[in-house]
Amino acid sequence: ADAEAASKYSLSKKSSITAGKTYTYKVKGVSKNQYIKVKMSSGVTVKYGSKKVKYNSTKITGGKTLALKVKAADKVANYKATLKAIVYNKKNNKRVKGLTTTTKVKCTKLAIKSVEPATLVGSNGYKYIVVNFNKALSKLDASEVSIRDKDTNELISIENVKLATNGKSATLTMLGDAATSNNMFVWANTDYVLTVSVKGATAAMDFNFPDVRADYPVVKTDASKRTITTASGTYTVPTTISVDFQEILGRTVTFWYNKNNEITKLNVAKETV
Image (tube, rainbow, N blue to C red):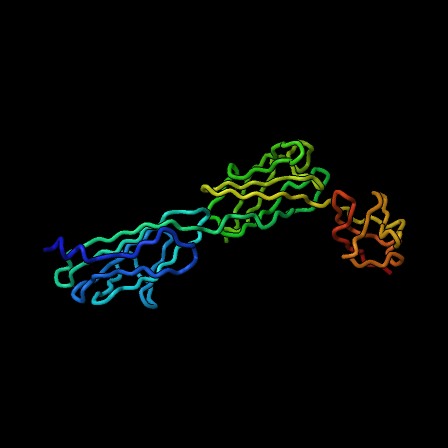
């Protein structure tokens, strides 16, 4: 008779769910003289009504179909989540039936949003760079990150990785001494590909940092060609940057430029009286 009664219980099954979204899992067959407790795997939260269900603690009384609101966390990679509903008799707290369902959780694909220089480039390149992610990482090791020169495929040695408190960015430290030429730093105006492989998920991004020239007087300008000339060379100013070519002549400027000698950012020093 007990086996026959136990067969009436059921728990919803889903082949897959999307991380971050809420789904309804129904528990059927629980009488008003019974209750359930819920167990859920790491990263899964359950609510009944407006109240959060505590792991193997909250008692939910039967007498009707019990609708559990289930949400799975968006982790680094897809994973399997398990939900268990255990039926008990109210009178003696005796366990009657255990119901289990396992589903695949589809997570947002890990992506690198941007790669930025953390310091101004010096004669030896960038020792520190910052990588921004589309989701939080709980841990990241130097062995899980690689930087390669796109043209030569040369691997840049990473000495250290420091993950931000929120897990959404990391500062990478290149191997070598900034005071010497014995280093493996990231050079300006060089194409690189950065790859992160963590917990089965991989993300990659090409990047290229502009070079900088600090405190150079402008010795020549050409408004028709939109160029300025300093002791370091001649550079094109795109139309996205507003500049008075007559007024800037003779002024001291700091500017960033790409491998095509096109200025990407321009700062004009204030004139001193």
